[in-house]
Amino acid sequence: MLLKKTWHKWLGFSSLCILLLFLLCASIVYGYTNTSWSMAWDSFFYFDGSNEHIVLQTVRLPRAVIAASVGACLAVAGVLMQTLTKNPLASPGVFGINAGAGFAVVVAVTVFQVSNLQTYTWIAFLGAAFAAFGVYVVGSLGREGLTPMKLTLAGAAMAAMFSSLTQGLLVHNESALEQVLFWLAGSVQGRKLESLVAVLPYIVVGLLVSYLLSSKLNLLSMGDDVAKGLGLKVGFIKLLSALCIILLAGSAVAVSGPIGFVGVVIPHIARSIVGVDHKWVIPFSAGLGGVLLVAADISARYIVMPEEVPVGVMTAVIGTPFFIYIARKGFNAK
Image (tube, helix red, strand yellow):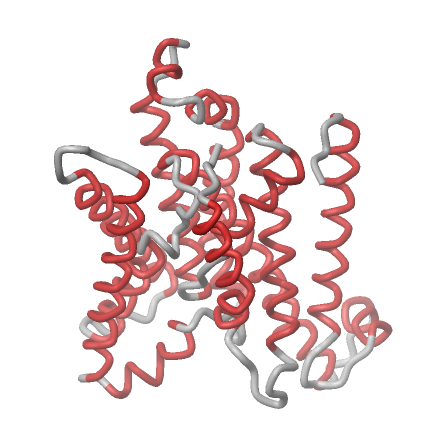
């Protein structure tokens, strides 16, 4: 359903925000520990120190907020990547950026015994940047230069390489394996609010700059030659967009580990609702990304209760059929 009128889009975005707020509340209320909506209300306004109130405040609230933030980061990063590369399959997961950031963090844990949250953040940024640069270089080789197909193949190769290197490191370090295995599957379970606070400035900058670039991205989506003819500094805009991708993807991986498919699925859904104008695609993608990841995290709690499935597994279950559909249809990212 394509919303064409501006007031329809505002109504849709308002509805999306309400849905996200409802899911955040549901994420706080529902889980293995039996709680209710009234108990959740009392835990924030009439805290009594009970186990249920502690769980609601210190476990489920951070988990819900982190899931929404990570979902928004990955979705907006996917929008930027699809616009820059003209590739409908582009996303931090598919192009190996998540895997690169994850590998860098695993190296820090296994080799250098790093445990500081702020250090994790910078290491994840470094890994994401290295992976992005590697994909660009490999995808540019050959006479044809950079093409969507070559980028996809280069991204898949980089993702496979980083995954193999990560597994190789963990095979020789069993103690580190126990520490990072659940994190590598992509999860928001057990994450502290401090881990989000550590990357929050980078998330805010990444999202804000992405939105401020929206009009420039509209021009860029017409093609580099057209954009240059209209006076756009294509190289500078691409550099800023790449920095935003690194900030958003690196922050997401630093907090929750590599979570795939959000960056592929959400931008296409957003475009089907509001069209190709990035002034609407970016905020809708942020909201839809938050909705998807929070909903997936709620579902993950009930699949094999009392155990939990990592939310990265849930997004893979949701995203894989959609990924195959996009690949078969050959949509062009706008």
